[in-house]
Length: 281
Image (cartoon, rainbow, N blue to C red; front, side):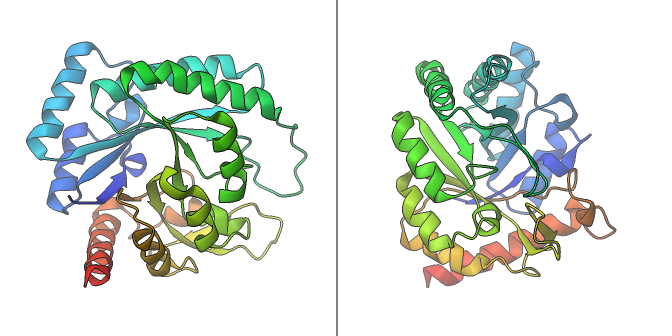
């Protein structure tokens, strides 16, 4: 199985067929589908359009890894609208035979000194459990990304244990636990078999220690120990995809000449294929 994938986030304005052609050209086995009309795949798609999209995936021999929804749950009353959006993304995932639906939890604070509302934890657990129960009849798992207040294996281990749903799992975005000071060996051990998908990226800390995130770089040019993280995951029995989440849309440092998918994607595929081959030998 080809375990390389890329998020379609930096492919805004391109058609699904364009993105599938890119995947085939650069030897990616899967697409992580950002949900929304600008990315060619949307919960608004009509039934025949969905059937046509599924046929395109099958012809290309590329898998829909997951629907990367923008749903974000906080445990507050506003989750009602978010849960409805999630239900629509779950139906889309079912129709495209995607492996799951990505959700976020918490608040996207840019600085550590920002005053953010408290998260009503028990309500959040209940909302996640409800979402999993709604998705279960369609066979679609809910995938929580390591992000925000739930960026670490420590925070997610408790949450997963409290949610207690077999169809609740985690996308391990490898930079975010590091931003919180948690080492990869600990993250991988805590997530265990519930780590079902991996986002690969690289970066360095900002000079300002109150910045919540790191400054992103090209793969291999930052301080994220990608090779050792992949080795740790492989030793732990991880069998999912390694997806490049190239956040051109959100990250000014990636909005520069030479940072386009046509340059970044084939470079990533070559580096990751070489790394995985080396680990096999």
